[in-house]
Length: 228
Image 1 (cartoon, rainbow, N blue to C red):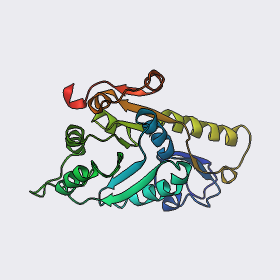
Image 2: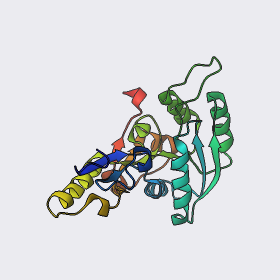
Image 3: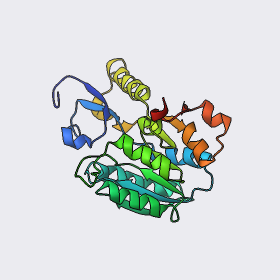
Image 4: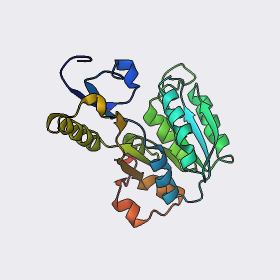
């Protein structure tokens, strides 16, 4: 469809539009899928106001590089928060060691890439097992950007909303079909309204009291997934 006369509106694209030839194409525009970093930090500090120092963890996948770059760029919007370290972890044993060390070094942990950790036998450790171990062994609040992480024990996230992605794409399509705008005149940008999610089970384990207004505005997981 790139470069054809047919208007093309996308949503849910989380890689660079350049990768697909979208950038500069006269007939393509749409909605990018990007993490809600600042919004997630704001939610985290609503739950745990004393959070100041963060440790961020990723695995060895190259997919995390652009996310980290965007996070670094937006840190200035949260002057009360600093990232103490950006860690690339290779194995589950190294992950466990780092989480244990973090207990006295940071106030909260950002869990991004946790899919490519191997155990001592060279077997991949499922991310659900990584999160369960974390919930059972870490006394620090943690965050991520995906709702399923919260289900498996991460304290909170503001996830990308599929509804908002579709709604924004629909609004763009209307501008093209009804108002006669050209796709090339409509900027490709991410949706701005995310979906807050909170693990009430993890909050209780950490001794954190969550305000009712936070719970009323979020998807709440009252139990850990492995308890259901």
